[in-house]
Image 1 (cartoon, helix red, strand yellow):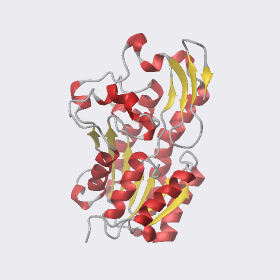
Image 2: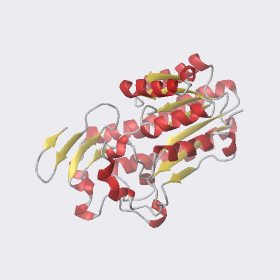
Image 3: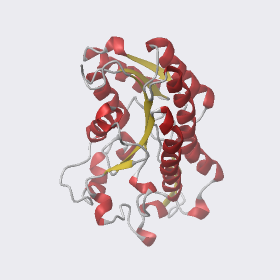
Image 4: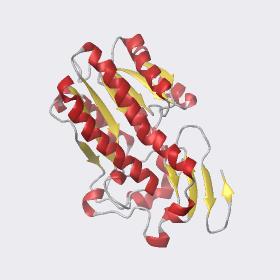
Length: 292
């Protein structure tokens, strides 16, 4: 039997980037997968790719705003209704969130960042664990954390703080759910070439990719491979851990976006809504421009 044969998974943010790569890897490894994403266009594309690969009957899409409890609960219920149970929940959905100097950060942008990056993980853990306890033989909750949550200099202050909270949640909830044989494990990517990072212009971020000691660019498949391992029984004794997948970036120390006044996040302010299909807002602090 394949590595994930007979397993049922949900992947939030599963319609693009690392999420889509992981959906395809889970399907190839024998799992049935619910693709949960806010972006319905990307969701349809993902299902079309799955169908073209011979996995059409093993994948389904559900529109999900991961910051809303009703949507998260509905995604879990869809997995149970469609495929009978839930074994793996990969809480991957994310956005770049608020950026800019602390004095220029709007409260609503800060709250949005924590809603999508941190509250969503709480909600996913809550409802996934309830579903997994029903069948009594455990499960795996994977979470996309970030090296930005482990050290300064890896992202904006809001994004980094939200991811640091996620890493703490992983540790605490792993301790709570261990007796139920539910493992909770984080993946902390470095710079991965996804639409969230490059927004369609990967060449713009070559400087960030070159910071890492490993010579190859981080691609979504790098994360999908680790997710498939951690979701499998090969990783059955790993829980409460957040695994860095960063090409050695954190090992050498980072200042990905520059330092001091030259830090990219100090030159503009706004909110990055990722691949949700909702507009990014940027205010250029040097010129006073406001654009979407």
